[in-house]
Length: 299
Ligand code: A3P
Image (cartoon, rainbow, N blue to C red; front, side, top):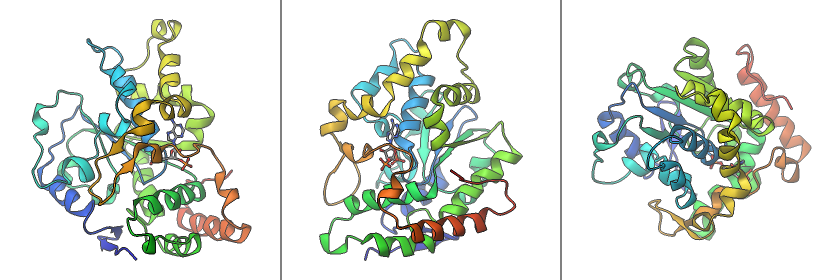
């Protein structure tokens, strides 16, 4: 099995993410105008990146928004620890104009003081843990190069319940941002995939306001919001040529196709994979961890 290493209570692959995070921690200097998309894996990061990018860049001239038609959202909103700082050479992010839109899978508890005191904003998205796990299981088996190392659902489930998965434990990851959003709602926006699915427009407006670029009445009348929703829908993104045939620049021995980020995009797909007993175990574990926090993932 691929090795995980624990760093300050969270699990990483030692060759991926952790060295990149160490470099980002030491060298990335956030600006107050930066917006960081923060997520555990497989909670809809790709979708949130597209929505945030399209919203933030809707009035640029020439319009940067249309980059989403030819680029995967992960290219438009690069990840700090995997892509930007996950290479040998340090990136020069000072040349990127404000507001910079970047992303990370690193939990809030690990953020250095320099990030927390920078005044930048964090948009966090999470998802029902059962769907997160199923999406993660599918994804990870694509990332694992060696067929002999691919993991059965049962084995990965047991590890997940122990918190041993990339950037896990999931409950601590989620609670870190949840608690921060209660203390500092102007700086930390907490979103859930299911709510984003059931009322995308309301949540998009919330996101735009949070990012400091609310939709005007005129824009709403002119269908600007609708256009973004449409452009970023699962079907639209999945059907773009770049997402059907393009690949991700991950440092793996094999290419990862962009299509891996567009599997089903549904709420509740876990019923097709988890036994009722597994579902109950995961629910109970999460309920226990979230007890007293005011956070729940009840369906
Ligand atoms: P499934 O595996 O359940 O289909 P991430 O972007 O964090 O890696 O998460 C990937 C999950 O988000 C996948 O879930 C994927 O299908 C879903 N997803 C990607 N784009 C989406 C979109 N535009 N709308 C809704 N879900 C989307």
